[in-house]
Length: 455
Image 1: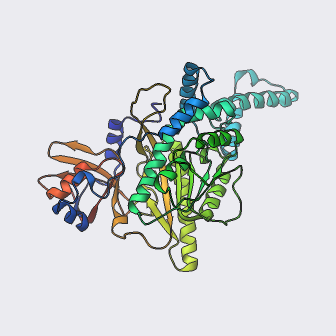
Image 2 (image 1 turned 30 degrees about the vertical axis):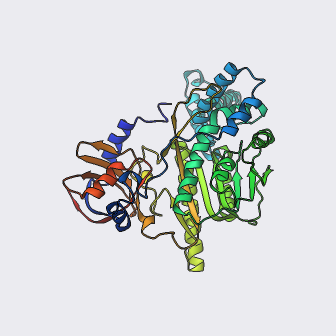
Image 3 (image 1 turned 60 degrees about the horizontal axis):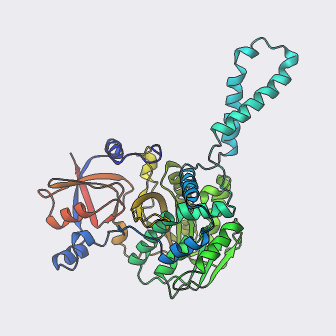
């Protein structure tokens, strides 16, 4: 777990040392935000760039359904198995590509062949030696390279473990992403939704919270019939009822019909190789009418997969825009730009991830709060941003360091760079200072960055 979650103070030191530049930019607050603050319509803690912060609890009807479904299972054993499943899920890696597998296989064979036992081997023994070495190399490779990389097989019991271990964090993450879409695009009313890798249905639960009247159809795709059956059992207990959910085992290959929202949450990991992932991403983009939401774990491996998808879709947008002479889409969240991710080129040691607070699912009555990190990207189809100025707001990519009379914000900014800015009472106007001080990891800071001066 320590390898996945680098302590925040360690991240802060590394981020500070790897920044493109420690800048002293000229910054001004968005005029709309300034006016709202001056008129006391909002406070700095509730400026328009603030993303949902509260701990999210899954709906009560899910908890009621859970207790009914697991009543025949020993509670203690179920909780222990769910904890093991959670740790296994967090430690996953994408399957090793065939080319990489073959290259490592040859390296291991070469190293084994240099052992002393084979130094004086006779030519006639070479065939037997090669066979023995190949067998040993394959066994070592399977243990050291493919560990935790294969897709999880969801039978009926594993599906219950997934529900116990992942329903609360998954739901909180999707809820937070949908909340940002709803708050920034309040006029958008989703009529249909496609959930690729739907699992137990957390995407459907969250969507029903934000578009309860307009959402008429939800197509849920999952290869496991057992987990789909569990999802169907759960949704029968929904209050109010969620209608129009259809379960399918495979993603249709045709681009029609299209869906207002297309989601792939924690699913790309399950695909067998990079080619399959890219084909799935392409198919999902073609199925998208408005929003495409891609989410994976906030680990190095999860961020790598999200960035892979980000690069592909940006390439598709650029290619289609050149042909049709009109922008075909843009990144809605979290990036304030369409350049190469600076976390890859400059800050390679730290994944671009964010954090959601949630109340874990428990068979007991205790209500504690936990946090889950995730990497994601949301694309919006169409050639015009909702608000050209708002779309350029910088994103806070690490916890804001609040100190006496100053605050340090580390941001991804619209020119495609990482920037660290020290906001202080003495050097910045009060509304700007208090907005920066009140902004947290994942928020957008409503600022305009002007030509800057170096320290």
